[in-house]
Length: 492
Image 1 (cartoon, rainbow, N blue to C red):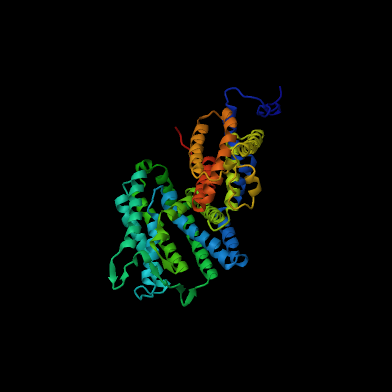
Image 2 (spheres, rainbow, N blue to C red):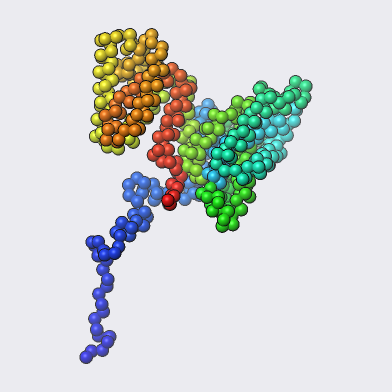
């Protein structure tokens, strides 16, 4: 008999290629698939792992620093400066809503308070001309204290109740600055409806930011510093506690997290950032009025945070960029061509999202075009006045619209009737089974084109908000967490 050392070793265990007894193959491979997702999503995820937040910040700062070299003064103000303003405002709101999960609808009041307080301290209104190095820190501390005061009675409120209280605060601020009684002969505390004019520019140690380029770089440096500070806060124990508060306040309190203290801190930090942005905003316009701090600006700031993703700092930057470019693209002073092209692209996108099959999409689009040509031809032959209306501001797509969309002449109520019919048709389509929607979509898409060309195209401001809202609705259906937000997983 040989020694024990001469015996052959047992073979190495080999993982079977096929199914294994007692093992769920899908569950066993879930971790592997999650670690290496395929397609575009996988590529973006792997790129995000390489491009860490510090690298993202460096890329943003480097690219943003070059903007004044290739944008004119007007475009620098319209795009560059307003993007950075929305970045700062979005960062403050993201601290309250994105980090702590507190629905603050009075946030814009902090923005207005900072602008008005700086205007009082540094303008001809009362003859006080404190330098920015003194007035700006005082405004930030005071605005943060105001946020703290608002948070004290609101710390036990959540959801809708907190939203109602903060919304009242925001509207009370607008009423107050519009109706303050005179304190000095001929002057109100806030100037009333006329506001405060002739605000001093930002000045630091004898250097004044008077040109658009100088103001842009002040905003850029401020945005980079605040982004850096919030990144460290988000990565700290405080940031993890804030995220716990956002996800489940009851569970966070049960494990010893100081929920009320975190709420107050989030309110104070967000209000301080808004107040600081208000100071810069006042110097940019050299005047402030109550109309600058009403509901539309609140909606815009929320759109920035929602679009980018709650809790995402880089998402705020991306959201501010998309919102600003979209608003200028759809601005009422621009030709209707931009809005028209975007509208028809939006219709095509909705059809793609509903059908998710290229041959079905092509079939629906072809049927929509054929339906329009047929309707136009029949109506022109039977009742020419119902198809003789002119196309508003032709240009792009104008010739196609003229021979495809039904635009009546001399029938003023047609647009309203078509709008009601469109609402009913959309509601009906949502109740259909996906297999049957393909038969109804051509008629609904064509009716939407008719409503656009007969009603909304005549009201640029209304069309702008409708298109913008529709884009957000589509995005929220595709990515509820926003462009760069993290999807929320709930266990039921």
